[in-house]
Length: 178
Image (cartoon, rainbow, N blue to C red; front, side, top):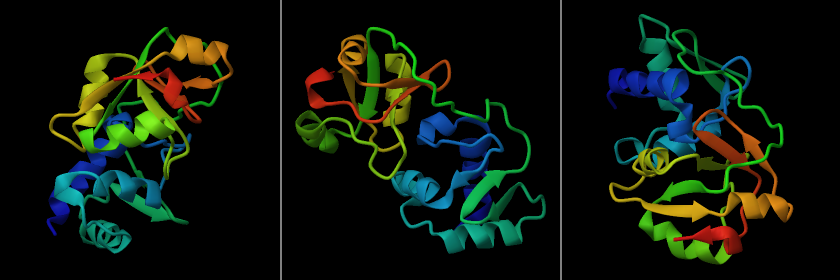
C-alpha cells in the first residue's frame, strides 16, 4: 500500500471535492469511516483499503494531515469547500443528473436511486458534474436524468447540498430517464 498516495487521495476527497466521492461532511469536516471506505473501494486503485490502512497512513505521516476519532475521519486543514451539507428541503431545478456505472443502470431503472450505505442519494445540477462523479467508478459512466421538479411536486424531498450537488432520500424509478 502506498500510504503517501492514499494520503493525497484522502486530502483531495476530504478537503476539496467530497461531492466527487459522494461524501457528507459534518460541520467540523468529519465523515464516517464506513462511508469513506465505500467511496474509496469503488475506485479501481483503492478497492482494498481498510480502516487499518487509514490508521497506518495517519501514524506514518510526518505532516499529520488527517485524524481519526470515534469511527470518523477528517482532514485537519486546507479545506477549500464548505464543510456542511445542510438538509433543508428546497425546490430543485427542473432536471438533475446522476452519473453511474453502466452495470448499475438496470437496477436503478427498476428500483430507483437508493442511498445504499450513504445517508442520501447524490444528484448533480449539471451533466459535467454527473459525468465527473460517475467516472470515479466507471470510465464510461451512464448519465441519468431525473425529473426533479415533477418529483418534488409529487412529494419527493430534495435538499440543496452546494452549487453542484443536490441530495434526496430516494428517487423512484418513474422520475428517471436514461
